[in-house]
Each structure stands twice: as structure tokens, then as C-alpha cells.
Image (cartoon, rainbow, N blue to C red; front, side, top):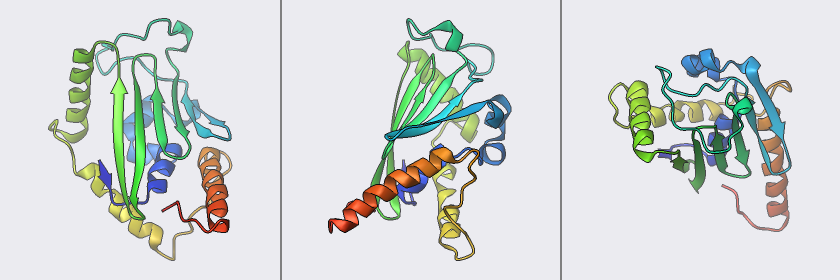
Length: 194
């Protein structure tokens, strides 16, 4: 999937949770912010949800990975391995998304996922796609929403980079990580970050 946005905006979007209640209200109903916990490290940042629910809709769910402890079925982890690898780790499936900078305002995302029982996973993915787009087809709406965000971010009225210390520590950690690398790159005369 291609985005008309800088790669860092895609990573920030994955890390910050303030947009969930308004942009993803259904998700926020089943996974409210109060049930999330932030984890930080030098090499990653992310969230753990303590209210993950196995299944989509009618209580059906994918098979759980062998040896996954039953007492953490309700936990889901969503870390970003710096700089550009986004993970989703749940008892019944996992996904990896790599955010690839193409230009300063163009980003490509590659998604991989796995679960036990591949044919059932395909049906679940089709069901989710149909529910989110209404047709089961890939939605251009998912990428078209980025252009207005990018235009707003370029506006002089927008004060970017001001984060609340309560929920945005993961995003702030990513900013710090990138800032440290950009500083090193600039000092060495290299331009490696778009």
C-alpha cells in the first residue's frame, strides 16, 4: 500500500493512540485507551492492550498458537522496532508491517501476517476487509485520508511535535530515536533519512 506521506508519519500513527476514539470508534469500544500500557526501550516502543478478544464477531476465532499461555489470551502487543517495523502480536495471529521510505512524501507499506489454519485466516481477512470497506475490495479511502493530514501538518498553524507525557511517550521515544540518528547523519555529512 502506498501513502502520500513521509514514512515517519506512518510510524507515528501506529504508535499514538489519541486518534482511536474518533477515527476508530468501534475498535475503541472493545479496546479503550484505559486498557493500554506503554512500553519503551532504546530499540522499540509500543503498546500492550489488556483487553484483546479472540475472535471476530460471533465468538469464532482462529486457532491459538501452541504453548501460548491461556492467562495472556487477552493481551495484544503492538510494538515498533525502530526505525520502521510495526508488529501486532496476539494469541491467534501476528502481523508484520514494514514502512519503506520512497521519497520525502511517498511511503510504501508491506504487510505480512500469519495464523494457524491458512484457509480460515483468508476467510477472516476477507470478512474484515468487507466490514471495513463495505465490499471486500481494497479501499482507496484508507490511503486518501493521508493527504489532508499531510497538508495540515505543513500548515504554519499546526504545532507539530507537542506530545502529552501521559499517552504519547512511545511517539516521543520514536522522535528521540530518529533525532539522534539524524543528528549523527548530519554531523557526518550523510543524508540517510528522508
